[in-house]
Length: 638
Image 1: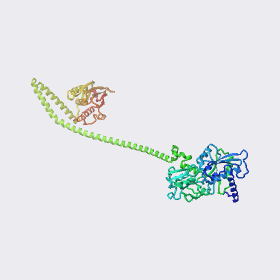
Image 2: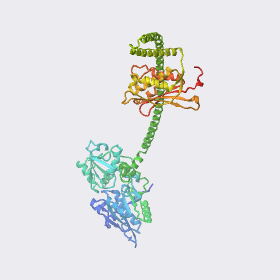
Image 3: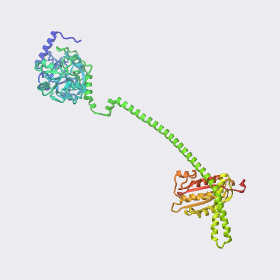
Image 4: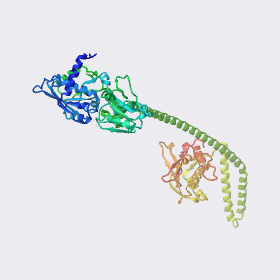
């Protein structure tokens, strides 16, 4: 603990100081206790040692130390201690000539930038706001009222005592406030920091801020007492300095809002505490001078008010203030940049990014699962459709077989029952012919007609016999010249009404013998011609083109005859094309039984042949019947 000087010694020092202050030293700083105009103009030099001893003069070549002293609203008793300390420096360091300039904050900041001062005496707020990188703190003031250099200044918010509506700082929201804003002392900024603690916006909290000129802090009291302002902001200890100066007329008329106690500062104040007055060196001060000044200040005895110099160890409170209010070095926080967004919201951005990745991954997995499930459902659906289609086809085939069986039964009945009437018709036609033969000259035309009736009746009887042979499993096959049978069938078909619906043209006709029932071959040809005419009859120039081609094989026994019947009818769909000749008893013609192509296929397959269809070069269809060529040695069961 620093020792207090003995009373006798202290009395001597005070007498010496009073002598120096009254001796009319060149430009004496009486302005510290006078009006603000005198203070703002004060500039003086201290002759080394003269103020205290009266005998020491400047040594030849003494170095000048330019001191920039921040002008402060009087009364200010810490200022008297600073003046005392500068005179003490002049006495202890006669090799230096100290020139003191009282400057405003703006002028002092400019002087530091232009390197016009070597030492700066100012509150820590000036170092933090105006020249954070140009000044280096040497020592700070402490006193009985503020024993901690890092917690020695605060701001006091005053209101009239009769304002019952203003109990706390929170009540000043939207109110008028008076303050000296041009002095970097605890004031408006420190109060705004307290507003932030109230979770309010410091920039919009007060209704208005009435600016009082610098060095005129007493006028803040006048604004409050006159009612021009609802509240006023003073530096901490300003009220106590006024009372020390003998001005106590307003003591009973004001009170301090949210007055804090037992936090390190004996003066009444409303805000948190901040570092106080300091002496700082600029880069123009030599290392020797800085070391000497620091050593003298730190060893200067404590005065009657308990004031002395020490080293401040914590200045983070102003860093927190600037960051919270986004001013000074942290003014960039008022602007939103990518860097600031990243720095302030990095955890949230990372969480959002991870969440986004999770959502994307979830979406991708969900899409994959949906696609996989969809494919499975499509396969199942396709299988169900195939099963339904197969079941439908089997049902249709069973139905067709039932109809075929019914037609077979009907055919047997027709063959059985029609045989006798046809035989009677034949007998009658033969008897009629014999009667006509007896008188040929009279009934010549009738004879021909009856002969035709007889021929057709015989043909009908042959068909019925053939149907009966189907049911009995018998077949009358023999060697048949395919080309001759083709010519006969075409000639016969052309004579019918259907045969006249289209032009029937013959192309290449090769000769060859096949082993088949002649009636079966005739049915094959007639049915193919009939189907071709039906397909082409509705076009502008219906045409049926017929060819018989002999196709050699690797051996003589493998030779085949191919009957090609081509129409120029309209193009049919792929489904209809695929169904050609496959469905029993399902005709594409109104009133048809659907037996034509089925009969052709059955008859061809019974003779080791086959029926197929091809799309022609145009829109029509070509029906192809392939039958093996018969050689005499191939006949084993005539």
